[in-house]
Length: 126
Image 1 (spheres, one colour):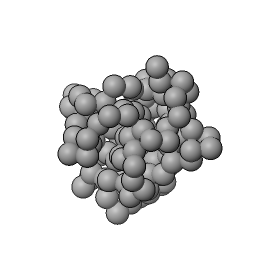
Image 2 (cartoon, one colour):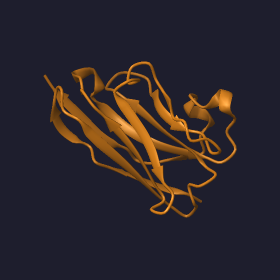
Image 3 (cartoon, one colour):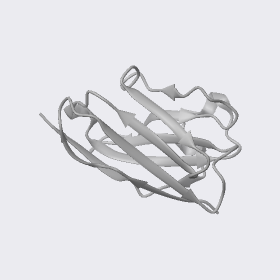
Image 4 (cartoon, one colour):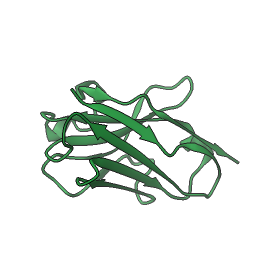
């Protein structure tokens, strides 16, 4: 069983940067695919970024590509998502997800992840 706890959300202004953290317990993240999703009010959950279990190159959604960096620290069993140049449309609850058997072609599909955190709210004011 894997427990994921997100942190780092808050109220920021447009143009600011933010770093979200996802601490995992119960299982090492090494060899586990880790991902970030987000859900804005009234919207469906959407993929943000992911690190495949055997890879080092993050995958990003178009909406955040070029201004986001996802990384992992295996020693701390934690993954991070840094988003720069935040926009009001980045406002959402950000969720961390994990899965050890997901295939690369399903990386962006939330339903394929077994473990989820409770989320952290990010609010970007204009």
